[in-house]
Amino acid sequence: MIWLMGLSGAGKSTISNLFEEQLNESGFFSMKLDGDEMRKGLNYNLGFSMDDRAENIRRAAETAKIIASNGVIVICSFITPLNGHRTIAKKILGDMYFEVFIDCPLDICEQRDVKGLYEQAHNNTLKNFTGISSAFERPTTPDLILHTDNFTAEQCCDQLYNAVKNKIADNA
Image (cartoon, rainbow, N blue to C red; front, side, top):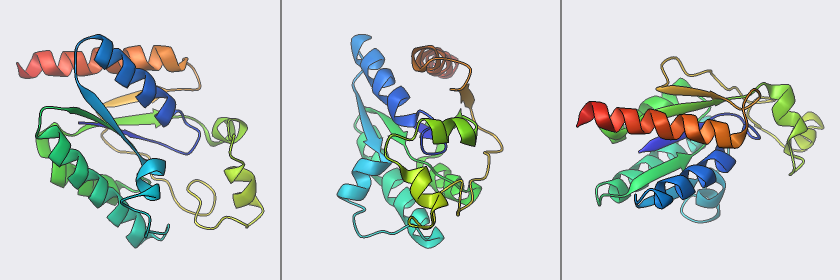
């Protein structure tokens, strides 16, 4: 159960797509759960208040737990802005939880913003946007930090693959 977190535009979805491809090419069965996709379906009724964000993470973690219990490697890609939200996921997923912080400076995330979300947040037309009008707490104990401002998405994916492979070897 791989949990990718970070600001919008940090590279979570790009890395999760590459990582899923790499796992499948290596013979592992995997599945992605993406925050944007979950909000179109299972979490369509949630807003962006801190309570709704916590519920979003709870539902995602419970869904990931069900899928992972069937032998599937689950790659979750969620902003997960607060340490309290991460605690929710950790409690639900237990030893299966592998936390990856996609670390990218806010100014770089803003430059990558293809959806125009940061501009909307700065213009106050988008409320509760993480990193602008809503807090993002840096994780205190991630299993891995990927610096997408210094490395390509492919290089970050390779770092993630090697870290997960090493974790599996350590637990074998």
